[in-house]
Amino acid sequence: MENWKDTVEIITQEGQIAVPYTWWVGDTGSRFLMALRDEKKILANRCSECGKVYVPPRKNCGQCFVDIDDWTEVGPEGTVETFTIVHFNYPVQPVKAPFAYVLVKLDGADVSLLHLVRDDIEKLGKGSRVVARFSENRTGSILDIDSFQVIEGK
Amino acid sequence: MNDVAIAGVAQTGHESRKDNMIYADMVFDVVTSALEDAGLTLDDIDSVVTVSNDFLDGRTISGMAVGDASGGQDKNISTVEGDGTFGAFYGLMRVLSGYGASIVVAHSKGSECDIRYVTNGMFDPIYQRLLGIEAISASAMQAGEYMQRYGVSEEQLAAVSVKNHGNARNNPYAHLPMDISIDDVMKSRPIADPLKKLDCGPVSDGAAAIIIASPEIAAKATSTPVWVKGVAHCAEDYMIGDRDLAVPVALKDAARRAYDMAGIKNPAEELDLVELYDAFSYMEPLWLEGLGLAEAGKGMSLLEKGVTTMEGSLPVNPSGGVLSSHPVLVAGLVRIIESVLQLRGQAGERQVKNATSALAHGINGPCGQSHCVWILNKDK
Ligand SMILES: [Zn+2]
Image (cartoon, rainbow over all chains, first blue to last red; front, side):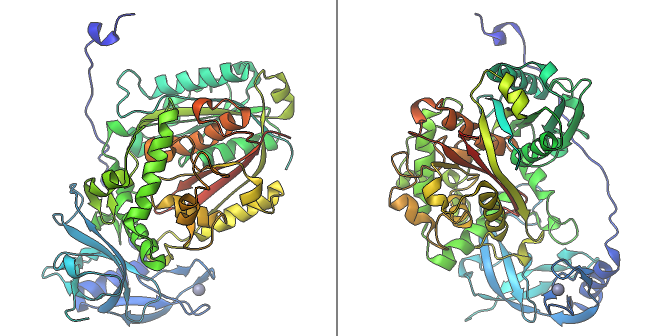
């Protein structure tokens, strides 16, 4: 049987799904992002049932299934729970590889915040102490924290 | 659970670029082959579940685009956006609720998009997605957490890649059958530490279909039925920072429920093989721990003692697993199909001797946020 590729040219069609979204971040999310933008503070909230301190803050505790309304400030320092040094690039990443993703347990929080480390990535380890560095131009986004910096000697 | 059988199975070969088939062609191919395998016709089928992802396919309501090709004309057809094991769960529930037989068919072509955009899209758009996080980097953090917690080394994990790519050499459907060494894995390109190229499954094009049938329809089929003895799925927190990534609690829950349903007391003794969703090398030992087949942190010891090799008492991923073929969404259904082929004694060169009971496993969400566990048996 002859190869179909000998008789037919392979034609492809390029395209993308490009749908603009405008997500309402909610009152809890707005309060968190306003604090990042206006005060360079990282807000969290505490479930009154289980006592867990969530960051980013949540409207409800999924474990206890109750509303959360007890605000607190966490960080800006924290401890690296786990990390990875990324060696590849694609356009959604806000920084050029190599850089690191970290899950940081901010001081005072019970869950880890996902963020990134740009500098001194070779010094990162589990248990490393890091501190949030805020962006100069803050717009009310998670990227108002530019990155986390490794605290030397810890 | 009432008796339900898997009466037919089919898969395409899995490969990097299927340029001779569009989605619908792949779906038509495996549905036709699964019916043929079962010795049934579309007249015996009254329920169709397709499995697809709109972002992977680049079209909304992607299930409807394969409605005709899946045999869904004039039938009750629906779609699951998630792994094939979860689609199969839906197909099973329909049979348990009175339908005669469900076709469950999954398709994906990783070659036609950049999968990193798709997996970035599963993360929270406000707090995580802008960071560029996607499945590989998130999994790398889970691997790091697991290794740190229990003192597991990269060389140890590399042995999983060696075993599974090696097993794939006996599987004519596998994308990457390879004869490699631990050194090859260690020297492969760093992707996201500690994951290197050969710690990561490929992204494959492929499709798969199964027919889940009531005992009445299974009796009409000419194939040897394989019986569903237990099945469960469980999920944990959405935000990866809320989870202990080194302890797969959702898998523990799902496994316990599936074992209970199947009446399994000692899975290590009672199972003859396991097909699990090893998208990355570290997942095999971690999921074995979640399945209760190894203690926390001791998942690697099973391979090191030879238990999970083809010659061992509990071969894991005789097919070569997801490390050697990763059509996203399809891969979980392929775990069920491999288990069926093994239990029928039709697994060719990779046949596990005297296999009567098998476990098939699929995952959904970042770092195994949810798990689906199937216990299958040769006997009713
Ligand atoms: Zn709570």
